[in-house]
Image (cartoon, rainbow, N blue to C red; front, top):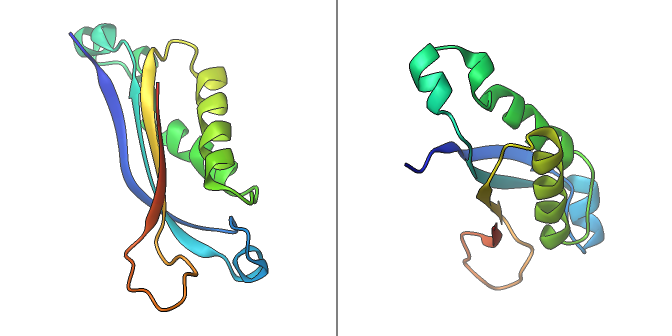
Length: 118
């Protein structure tokens, strides 16, 4: 059985980007995190202590996102590192980080994104 905890489409304002305005004004980011986590015991016990509490995962994402980076690649790297440090039972996962209003002139672009899977 594969067990996955998902946080989907968490919208946060952060200051990631190469352009000076991005680091000053910020941008809206859409973050999705899926982690493979053994929650069979939680299914039987109905006890939050036997699973990965997604409220804690959301707080962790907010904390990592609050530290500016030039590259989205660096942000997903830091997110993965913190998730694995906080939740050593995680067996794999996926993080997708999208910048919703990228500063690319003369384009109608919904978002740009970086995704890591392990």
